[in-house]
Length: 113
Length: 115
Image 1 (cartoon, rainbow over the protein chains, first blue to last red):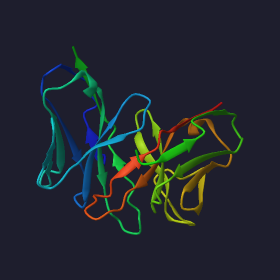
Image 2: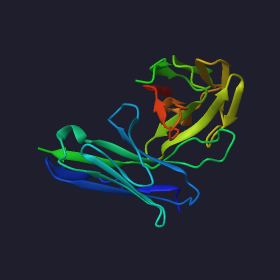
Image 3: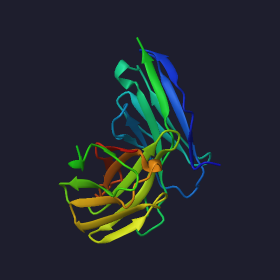
Image 4: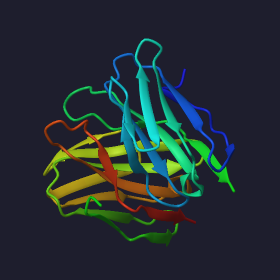
């Protein structure tokens, strides 16, 4: 089983709709979780850290389910500018600084006018 | 903006030549990372550094070396470039702060083509 799995999509969603992505992770000791957004030919940019209690930032809501080992991202009232690839990211703290991020391969979202 | 620059931004080189990529940060972060991104693989960690002269290997370190002689610069060297090292290379820093979740922030990337 891959460490971090995402549905690659693409998700084609009309503007204004709500869209949700899930991401599963295999290491139950994973400690930190994030959603990054990556535009074509650009660097990944941090969208949200995912807190144990869940968190919301404007139109974006992230949830963590440790029992089932998945995180989710919900985008409400989607905008054309939300079109991007969304990367699920997990940190497994091994100690000694060996905390490189483990990335999912990303979910491609296309918002259609 | 985490104050990270990478140079060069684009490079085309030939198989067998040495290549050095530079990552420069202006905010004095202790941790720095090099990743590569390839279609079908996502981003993968090559090497990382946890201080001046302190470095360690990541998931895909074969064929790469790194050096960090000062806090602000982290260099990635391909001793003898191969076509399999054609990729986009991203540098990242980790922000350590009270309450931080160890978020990492990325530079703009270097697009390397090995012919």
